[in-house]
Each structure stands twice: as C-alpha cells, then as structure tokens.
View: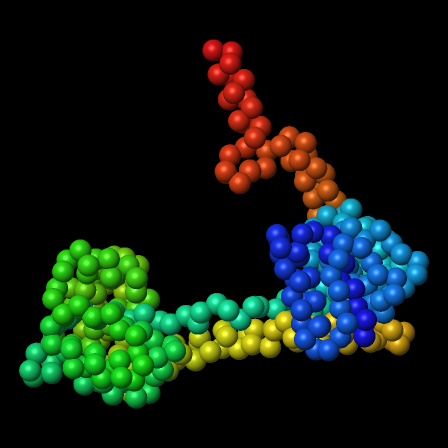
Length: 351
C-alpha cells in the first residue's frame, strides 16, 4: 500500500509530530511505501492527516483523520465538516469513539487505535531498604532474606542495606544479579538520604521494633515489617505485615505480579501494532466497508443520555477558552501571566 502521512507540525518538535514519524517508520518496516510530509500526495492510496483540525477537505483520493480530543463545539463542527470528505476518524481511545458517537458523529466513520509506547523507558524496580546490623544468633532473620532471593527476580527488586555483617549475603545476592547498595558502617547523613530513595522499608526482627521503621514512615515510605511492638502503635504504619517466611514471599510475589500487570496493560501497544491497526482501517476504507468499533457500541445508552450535557459543556468551553485567550491569563512557560507582567511593568514605569 502507498501511504502518505500528512503532518501539520514539525515532526521533531511535538507529540503529534512524533506520532506521525513513528507511524511512518513502522509502516515502512512492515514493507509499505510510506512518506511523511506537510501536504497530501495525490498518487497515494491513502492520505492520513495528523491531525483533523488542519484538514482542509479534499474531494479526490482517500483521506483519514487522526483525532486527539474534542473539547469544544467548534472542534466538533470542524471534525464533522472534515468527515464529509474524509473516510474515517481514528480516535486515540474507545472512550473517544463512544463520546463522538453520542454527540452525533457518524459511527461508520469512527474507529480507535491506542497510541504506542517507545519501549525505551527502563523497567522500574522496587527499592527495598534494610537498616540493621546482624548478630551471630540470626535474630534479624536474614536467613529468610537469603531464601527469598530464590523466588524473586533482579528485574523486580533492588536493595539498599546499611549495617554490619551483611557482606556475605550481599555477595550472594549480587551473584544472582541483584543490584545492592551496601554501607557496612552506619553514617547518619547517608542513612537519612537513603530512606528518601526507598519504595519499601523492611524489618524482619522480632525484638519490639525498628527505629528505622519510624524514620521511614516520617519520610512517607511504605513498610514490610513484623506486626509487633511500636510497629503496632503507628496507626496505618504497616503496609505489609509479615510473620512467616511464606507471608514474606507472598508479599514480594504480589508486588512483582502487580508490576507485571501494569506492564501487560500496554504490552501490545507497540508502534508496529499501531501501524497494523491503521492498515486494517485503511483496507476497510479502500474496500468500502463501513467501520464498526465494537467498543463504541458498549454503554451506548448511557452515552446518548449524556450527550445533551456534553453539548452544553462543549459550547461553554468555546466561550471560556476564547475569553481566556483574549484576556491572556493563561500561564506561559515561566509560570507567570503575560497580562500581569504588563501590568507590573506599567506600574513600575508610572513610579
């Protein structure tokens, strides 16, 4: 398929430009002929416009429009006017499709494709802190931590430990691939700095409680501790109470599972899949098949009932947004109003 991505902003500057560029790259990688430019290509099978606001309307060729959001009535009219000649409006979400369908936009021209992620952000690990020295009798239950390392992954957890006696355990953990920041000697300033970098503070000893538990709570850090002593007197201070090794293991496995679920939520939201879904939409448009977004049909009644209030809100936004523009009270990038700047300059000159 020969495709033209029409981008109305600098592809190297802002988010719509990034989307246009990534989509172009993904389509080329899939073996399609795709170019990126500021104007349509009459020889292309499809011209996809990023975004709908600047689409002038074309009577020849197949055109589709990317829709970010509709937050006022004039934008809704602009989209509806564009869809007189464009074959499809590709929204950013199923919620956007539902809202537009309820507002009267032709359902057979609505479809959604969720934006992709670049997959370059480093996977986050839970940083767990321990601040206690060890004793020959094993009273701090460090043996449970050694056992725990067999069930958890270095991709999910890292540790920061301060206290004498942990060196052999730290060496074993590092051999397993765990990242550990270890300070054998207690240093108060470093201890205070360390607490503020933790997701969880852990203490497994059964000797009334840990002073580090108190300091961690004062820093807003969540805790994994034995429910005993002054731990119990700190209301809502225990995030995860653990008494046995099985409870400790289940807490860590649960945290890892929650993280995996968050990653899975957008695992398929890749630029390749983003491009494939656009290709499927364009194939339907070329074949003259009406679009049907099944998610748009869900909760349709509720959205229709909410359509009138939404129309009122959109018209309010028209007048309110323009009023703010005229009065120039929107904050600039220095977080200070240009209107008030001029007033201050005027008052200074008058003095």
